[in-house]
Each structure stands twice: as structure tokens, then as C-alpha cells.
Image (tube, rainbow, N blue to C red; front, side, top):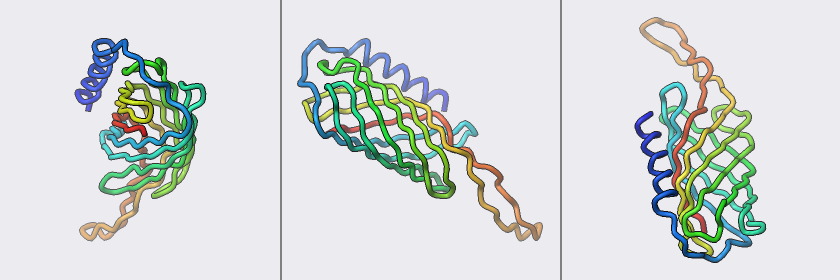
Length: 176
């Protein structure tokens, strides 16, 4: 997990520093939609896949405000976060730009509670209404109670206790 995370951080820094282009692009404006896919590496050593979509509007070409929902799942659990998102593009007139992203909301699914996500990354703009992005971030989910299950060998129930889905994430996104 540490190697994947560190490799991604190095790739992001290389992209910002090494591939920054001076060519101008048109400033984004109006409605935009996002789709992101990635992996969340939980602090307890597990991992899960996340998918999300966010829809909203750009204001002033640099600040995006929208709402969205997603799905976070592994072999045992599915969580569905609903959130409000704010995204800031540092250099909106460049093809390659740093981007900052914050999501706040709640989640439903196997449990329910608060949800928060903060990410930083690189946005690769190809046209006014299309861009690709790579983000690394930290995600917080309120802990939820795990399953109880029957163990025939011991003739007893076993509780998994509290499950913590919080962790570090790597995401790839498309903006249209």
C-alpha cells in the first residue's frame, strides 16, 4: 500500500513540475459533470473500490460547487456517500494544473454517519468541457458496526466489532 501511494504522489509531482505546459485553454464555465474511480486503502490494512459522480457549476472559472454520490465497496460491505463538493483549479488557463477537492456529507449502506474527503491532484485539460485528473486524498467515514455471524465449530456468534472505512485514496477522474 505504501509503495502504491508513494508512487502515485511522485507521479503527480512529476506531472505538475515536468509536464506543465504554457499553452492556454479556454476557462471552464457553467455546468460540469465528473466521474471518478479509485481505490481506498483503509488504515486497518484492507482496501476498497470507490466510484463517484458529481454534478454542478463552475463560478469564475476556478471554483466548482456541486453535489454528488458514490459507492465504496469491498467483498463484505457497500457504503453510499452523498455529499456537497467544492473543487478549486489553481491555474485554470493552463493545460496542466494543480487541483484541490473537498467533499462533505454523509453515507448510508451497511452503516450510516458522517463522510468527509479531501484530495489534491493534477488536472489535464484537453478542451473547455473535457479534462482528466489524478487525485490522492484522505477519506473519513464514521465507524459502523460489523456483522455478527455464527461459527458452527464453537457453536457461538462472533462479532466483527466496529468497522473503519477511513483511509488514503488514489482516484482517476473524467470531467465533461
